[in-house]
Amino acid sequence: MTYIYGEADEGTIAQLDRCLAVEEGARGVLCADNHLGYSQPIGAAVAYRDHISPSGVGYDIGCGNKAVLTNLRADDLEVASIMDEIAARISFGIGRVNDQPVDHPVLDQIAHAEFRPQRRMIQIARNQLGTVGSGNHYVDLFADEADRVWVGVHFGSRGFGHKTASGFLALAAGRQFSDRVPDQEMHSPPVVFAVATELGQSYIEAMGLAGRYAYAGRDVVLDKVLSILGAESVEEVHNHHNFAWRERHDGEEFWVIRKGCTPAFPGQRGFVGATMGEQSVILEGTEGAAAGLYSTVHGAGRVMSRTKAAGKTRWRWSCCDRDCDWFQGAGEHKPGDRACPRCAHPKIEKRPQVMSPGLIDFESVQAELAASGIELRGGAADEAPGAYKRLDEVLSAHGETIRVLHRLRPLGVAMAGAGIEDPYKD
Image 1 (cartoon, rainbow, N blue to C red):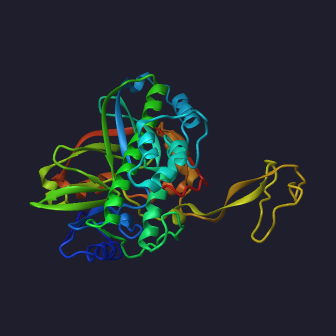
Image 2: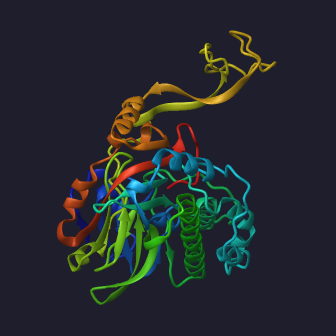
Image 3: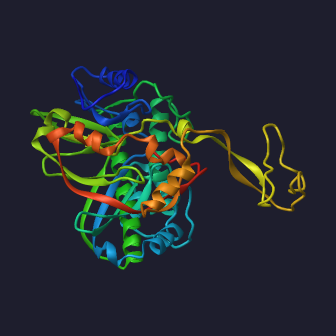
């Protein structure tokens, strides 16, 4: 049984149907921000009675959003300088830009994880706790209708979750947990474990720990932003949208696997981000969401692939002289003396180079955001508003299943910059 909000293309519906075919009587939902994902659509919920799906939850276990209402008003802020400090003190993409140690009880849980292979990931978990990632992961400042300041973040379990997911997909393929297996193709069949098996129970335990790590990371980042602001938290809204929950629907117990899909039970609040230039929302679920497994959108939903939006970019050796436009061409080797072969400048470095242009003019986007008073740090064409649906339209498709509590206008947006490759994004 499938319930669809708004519109969905045939490929996305077919992908969901493959997930439902795993188990007789499985239930599926496509939220209005749906689009193709790896194995299970993004913006989808799948409910199994007897199975759990690591491919459904995906590589970024526990990816989600957290928003904090502060005790500040927008007039209190010097937004430009605050965004400069956020960009300087919080790490986006791979690794971190500072060596300040981060401690949290979740690290002790990982060091003594019940699923023992996760214990070996303690160092990457420690290194990346409180880092944000790239792609559509962000730290944003907002003002609501009363001009109160909110801070919102979006990211997940980073390398710890990715390695956990990869390990279970390797086990499903008959390999060792530590073996590397190729990333799934977009239309790969779903990978599922019977819940009653040892492997199913191990995944549930490991997924839960990765989810706690993701929650901890968002807490750490928001605590740092509150410190930058000199602000206090007044209230918080916090949800995963890549996770599996044990839930009761219509008198039956299910494992509900949500990928890019926010739980929205009656009265349950969620923070749903839009694009870098548009209003985000705080919403809550209503009784009307029962047919959709009490699920709603996690964002606006893509209408354009990253490559289509930004073009193809490759890392190439480039001249550091601003007056020289040399960069390494296809088939060319790095200059042996590390000097520019065109102008002989003594320094070259690897930088992202656009090999074929995309459909979005990001310089124009940046100019429009600046004209709107939005302070952008980082970002790239593949995350521009033109690559996404409009959030108001996807929310409208969910009708009375949700209630919008606050509309948040962006003041500042911080993301990874162009050309950052990150294997841990969702």
